Length: 259
Image (cartoon, rainbow, N blue to C red):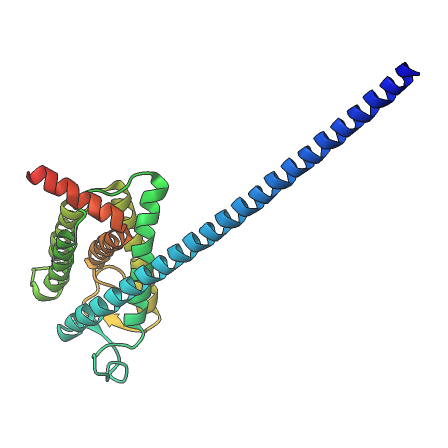
């Protein structure tokens, strides 16, 4: 009898201990599951906030680039029209800006696309652009680009080929002075090719025309303008893409070098 009682007591103790272990394991699993749920929720919220912040930053940069493109289009296209380099129908340019209504929005959209594309390509290639990353350099680049465009309308050469060679040298000089990146050079060439092709199609369809065309329907120096414009807008886009932390870090490094 004592053995039977001892066996029953041992069985009851083992069963109770096993039940306690199971309940402890279940509680532990429930706690881990709860923690994982909370962690997932926090990560999802953080990701959503980060995605929203990135989207707002992208939209803000796009709007700035669009505004810059519209402004440059109004100023530079007006200069070309006044010098009778480009000709629009009279009813088209009878506006306050003496330009076709569709030119500024198209240039603004192109500037936004190009300006957003440059830092994306840099990030994709793993080659962040670090050459002359400050607004003073960007403003000088814009000034040089406006000067190149001004020279295309103001300078008089014996023939368009001499003007084209001069503007090509100036455009390469602009890239070398303010960019010097392989991605910037490649994108500049691509932009020049695509923009030249689109312009050829526009002139071919009678939307507007160039005086004294020597490269099919356009002037031979126009790809140089597109190349330098792409490099300029790309530098603006890269500068806008710089984060606040990166700017402060660069300022601290500059101060350390000065000291």
